[in-house]
Length: 289
Length: 316
Image (cartoon, rainbow over all chains, first blue to last red; front, side, top):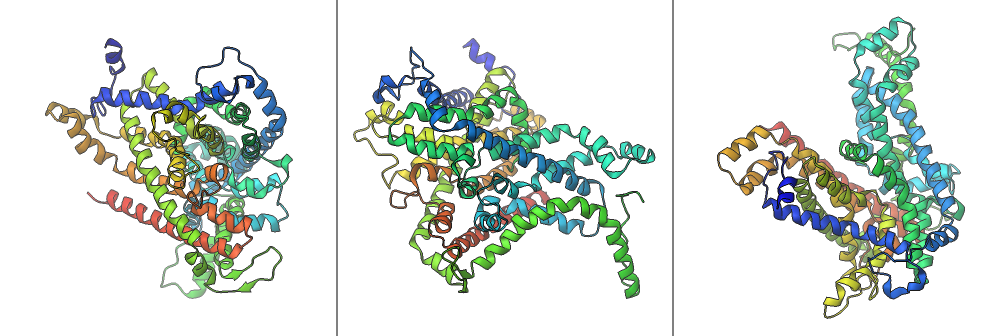
């Protein structure tokens, strides 16, 4: 009972004692455990020896003789090093170009007056409404016309401009006092020097929030790369995993599937565990991925 | 001339002679040039992959093109009527509606429960928040691989632990009556922790003094939830509902990995139908028509909800 009271000690007033608090909290604890079960099963199954057979596959108790065989098999069968490299190239490529486009556009919206500003602003807003995932059919034919079918560049290109990133940077730049820029102007700094030396360094938190959102969503992208990529050696992790799962499912190699899945999830998850607060606050500020 | 000096925009007055207006307007454009140059890189890509794509969907929907090389034939609204008459499409729309409502309500409800229970800043709460947030970071494809095993008949996790208590073991993904609900579970599992974040943020906006006053006046937990917290969270509800609706139409990776729309189209969703038409049947016309209908529906829904939100915030 004391533990329970201690859990509730620093409840902010906004939620103190809401709907039978202890019951609600208990339910949440139970659900949080349930929420982790697929993840726990993956880790346990990835380390279970294949010799244990299919009937023990669902047991959540870890094997007493854990093995790395499944992980080794998945690594070799699925060409995960290649998939990981491709996904890393895609995410980095998208992010680097986005940094340039959103910095320039964000600055224009934050600090410059120009003819048609409202109209162009609405054009950017439209991207948030138009849900890029739904435009895969016309975009696939465009990528093919540009000669980028079956290339990583083709996977990256539709995401080079980001309305969300532009708005985020616009907000960050607007918060920077104009006096700083005025001082640089007097010293004769050019436009790009001012962006490079005043606006960019002072907006690092916004850049990193954007980086988290951008990398997370493109790391997890599946449908678009599935359509653009044809060659097995250009597959990103998600497409590679789906093909791998299909093959391994037939042979009932669930330990290998669990190991493969673990490899796809691990990089993001480890980063999340290290930068938990950053991740959470980025997702809250973003809203729209 | 120093670039990008915030230029004052010349405003043309109606009394000014026409030529003068043009002159001032062109001066305005000249002063705007630096801004246009900064916007150019973004606008090029937006033009190609957003506005251009929108235009191409409109045009492609009017033509028939069944193979990449086949001659293009103008068919007007035939593609649209063909899609609307296709039972696979109408079936996918119905499935998607069930899927949208059936995933949005539970995941939003759970998100609210999680947020109310975990809004404290102690270690236990933050550990539980992290546990609930982990599925958000797991790619839908990876989640599907895990749930393939969970739903596996007899030996799978679900049957192994719970299924044995049932009189008959259902084939979760193989039964047309159950499969759609089975894949909905994955979506709820993945999204509840995501929506929780917005409710947590929303809860911080609940004024403490009002809560305290209500508390002193003897308002119980239910009264405070009903009359203070929920009204305060209305914008969050609306926002999360919009995101949940968009997610319901754009998240289909699990359909690809787990069911391919089957059994007998029971888990076919609109985006998977579009993919099938484009990639499996090479029917760009029908795929575009279906895209167009979906976009129209989504955009009017989004516009409507944002309008509601704007009205509400404009009101007293």
